[in-house]
Length: 420
Image 1 (cartoon, one colour):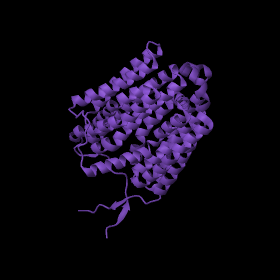
Image 2: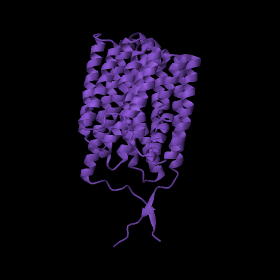
Image 3: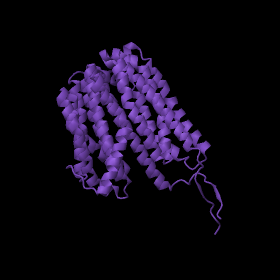
Image 4: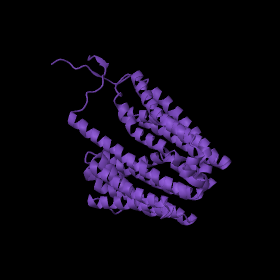
């Protein structure tokens, strides 16, 4: 019988592969940072010059874009990237992604007409192109031309900055700034797709089995990651757009914290993967280290933002500061608790515990929507913020407890190499 031993860390990949992987990772971080910075500037511009109700409609319009692009990524993009012929599959994949974009845009347009919101109307028109942009960017980052993805993101960021600057000096209004952001992203996505000869007409050329899997992944996304955006929509419908606007204004001030979190989130899984074959105690320490590092970087910024002087807050948000300021401490605490939850969730991905992660994510998602809506109905924006903190705490506890249970399993074993 062949003896078994604990595995040591796997040898690193050849230097060329390591350089290629590092290049893609660094470009992915650059793209993520550009995207987050552009979105932050957009949000600041709208929050400063819009009414709190207008900020709420903007937040819902932006959430619709995030929800639609995330759904397309779960249903189409991830399966394309998982294929060994991803570049070849991208042509038909673009048509399927565009189909999801069009279907997602229809309720946004209907809602915009119903409530007479220009933000929702603009988002409804632009969402198909924005979804296509996200598909083109993700495919090129993962399997195509990462430099092209960086170039596209830089071009969109420049257009966003120009629009935001015009808005900040009051040459144009906040609706026009949002239109520049949405229109530029949709236009860049469409032109890039045409340049790469992707199909830019909606279609669904997929086998029935592949379609069933796609629907399953889409439903999983909606009840897990998408539940936060669904909670925002439910809050607007039940408690009014002004409540969402106050929450969004507070989150806008916390933009630097969320920018740090999004950048760190892209590094968590690669870091934890390095220790996947080590004993459980080592994996626990590595997860605790990465959580402590991210918290150490973000906590001082979060505290500084939560204690921001009124003069600076009014300069950033103008009249909306009075509504956002009482929520900052709760929203900052939610952001920090999210770090622990994110590390625990990333650990499930590294341990390949997909079914467990889906079950836990579904349970938390089903609780999140009524919890946030109930808090908003009972106590307004403060109640919604309190419910978000409670859900972030519950998520951190649930994900970490489950992760620690996973790590009690023995580390993978492999045969000892035998002499020739």
